[in-house]
Image (cartoon, rainbow over all chains, first blue to last red; front, top):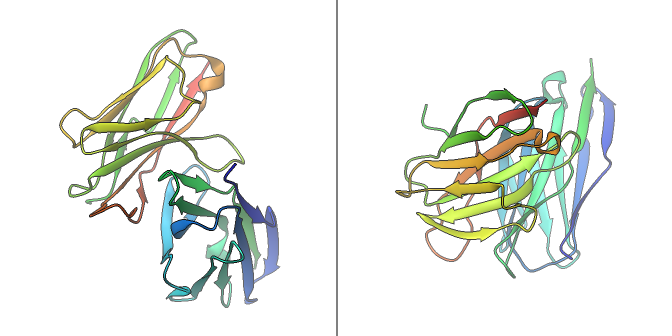
Length: 112
Length: 116
């Protein structure tokens, strides 16, 4: 069964710290992997998309990496701010059956 | 605003009633997805369309659920004879897929359903 796991489920860090969120997937045959942010009661906002042929993508203070062989992706947030508090989800786009599988997310709280 | 639009944003209904949600995708996007999300969980796939063709339905989707995308533009998701277990956020997403590869997903704000 194809699964996407995100660890930790929740994380609290002081403002200004750098942090890493983890995403692992059981099937390495993916087209791409996408990271999203979700605020309470809202839809998902796309942050970064990494194609299967790429190793990383950067947008501002965010950097996402992809290691297909180990089935892992990380989202690095530099110099965290209280406005970064949200749930972060990753989604793997699977080759095998064209499915998009989501993790359960990491709830991030940045302490002022 | 040319993002994905969903209506209504909130719907409260009594058990046994029918409800319909509408999704307007980004105009040039040919793929449209429906997901369901409950508290503390990631989105669960329900169904998706390539243009007007419904290509897959999740086994989670009972016969009470039906989705259409009649002209390859907007889509509707109807739930008949609602049950309390249907209470969730219903999310719509769209993407442009120029070939066999899946493009970047863009989500709407969701439609929250509460069944009393």
